[in-house]
Image: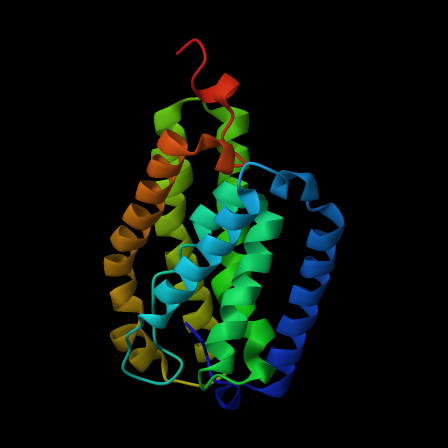
Length: 221
């Protein structure tokens, strides 16, 4: 979902960059750095960044600015917490920007669409589930991973499409025909990807999943 800088007005790029910068500063100050110590946490984190980079390199689309790819961001958020998920998306986006045609001027805008939106949605849904629903393994996997992944790519796509339409980059009819109608098909793939990743991680390496707590989801069940 990398949008070339040349398609967007300068004030869109500036506002997105400023918002993302403020959020990254907040993430730096609040990140639970201790969670990267021991247990292979750093290696799993770096490995996840590489896997998501490969995932983002597999993209399709018809028009410039309306390309699409699976995100995998919900899994990053659940495994490493929202702060480290944002840092990981920055690293992935830096690689795709360096070797792509989007341009560094659009880095903040693309981070907003493909990183900030899915991260905040996933973390908000996790909070609501922990607050109002039973602490259940199946709720964690199917709601916090599968459903959050599906909704995250839908939200990212709609934000991208909406902002491009608002900026006059593409006609509304073109955006709907070439991009919005594809999103429901991507939702299942994104949901399955994140749900499967978290199911395997919780089963084999629960110590790598920062938001999964045995005493909540397993003990006494």
